[in-house]
Image: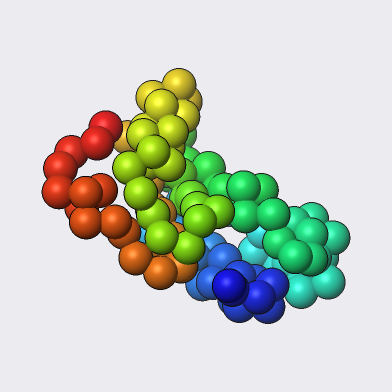
Length: 112
């Protein structure tokens, strides 16, 4: 299981990656400290709360989700839930930060 400081570093890296790709990031996400991270997401971390929704700086209709699955191994059901959530929010892109592996069945086909 991933500890909270590892998740903190992973999320900060994802935020930097999104900034480099010209997504709009709130100052509170850019500058969050480990203590603020624990206050906001818990310790142990509630991975569901780590989900990020961003828009491009120059196109607010171009959105992207970043999901942090609760389970170490990612299966079909969570991916289908993410697809439903994306459709509801009219989001066409997503990054899924997986702790371990994607199940072989989930790798096989288009799930959305």
